[in-house]
Image (cartoon, rainbow over all chains, first blue to last red; front, top):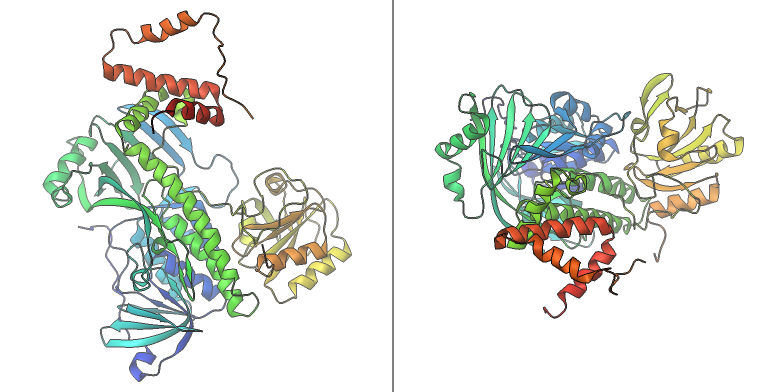
Length: 555
Length: 65
């Protein structure tokens, strides 16, 4: 198996502290070099924080596993300099089609508006994704990747954590100011802390078959209820790079997972779907069940959980890795400010609050999809089938068809880091929302707003067709020279020669942010909106900045 | 806030009742169940107000727990 990819083998090199026996205290240790752990490592390095990454294995994800990567995760990776490589290798898509029997009942477009740098979705085998992240991490002197290094215990002290790490050379201690547990759904760190991981188990089994074939299906997500080739169950088709296709078959709870993985069982199912005369090769087969569950809190003292170790969802909706990456995005800037003494430790509680809210949203969506795909009661099945039947002719019923609501970023509506609006704005860019992209011209080059939101706080001042008043520029320059990492840009209608200006020649930025002359946005390092006003008020901006780094007490 | 209307609203109640019963004529219990489910979905969309639906469901469930 795996004709299209050869697995890298990352070598184990004993660390200096293991060789010499001198225990070192690292500011941050990340457990797990999967997509979430590596994303966090790259972000820390970008902010100048050295990190140690411990991984129990010595290669990338075995099997294609997570395949669909959503816009928001790709935007994070683009900020970290590795997104374009993923997009170039991946299959870009945005259309999903849902079939009942052999009729299409519903079609959705995940990015209906133009002028965004990053596509709605790409499909890419997880092993490529991790390979690219590792390659990027290796370019940084600040990232110390340690393979075949398994954490076997974790003990929290007053101001640090002591990890015992098992390697081919034996067990040694590593001390960390902070630990980020990105060690997956079966997180051993979570077990060491004895934390409850509660939720719902779904009684259904699914078969994944990755096949290599030449096929002329379009680059779209196709989902079937009750297809002619797999009666009374669902099926899913996704295109991946290298002519690899992800086929997913619902099997039911009674299926025997070991039997179902055997080629003599899998091949007839694939042939029924593709036609007996389509040549293909099996690349990877897996049978899975799933659960929707999460930790109550993602911060436990000096140990923070991110990704599947903190929350687990069903695969329908691609909300696993796509919510893990925003965890890292949310956490890293906060911890970097805390390490730098520029924010109180309590800022880390907002990581838990904001990402618990996101996990709740993801679990809700994932559970609803699962209830539609795998009805739990006879009447639930009756309603599901009635929706599918009506959807053929009745447009309203199509919106009820749920084959997975695909991952979209969470708006931190209730976050205490937000400054509530005092002025009136139209559109979606409310405090807590992830910033949406728009084309801009910068230094005479065409680019994107998201490229200007570079991991620092960003203030946008809408100059539009006027100048930036001297007192505004002076106040913003003062903030930019202050202790917090901050940059400001004037947004102009056409080139005016203002330093750092973002020229909104297409007018998308004005449209998407409801800008009029004098409007001000404060955007967080993780590209979420913190505050906005209709006119510049230096004191209000400073207060919002204070609030966004957790200085406000009692809310 | 919209409210579930429970006062008598039909011009001819017996006609409406007969309409419901007649629509199930010659159907198997399974078919009747399907018809009811589709009818509920159509009417729920027609009402278009989750609060009214929730109130109707609450009234319909009375005496069942």
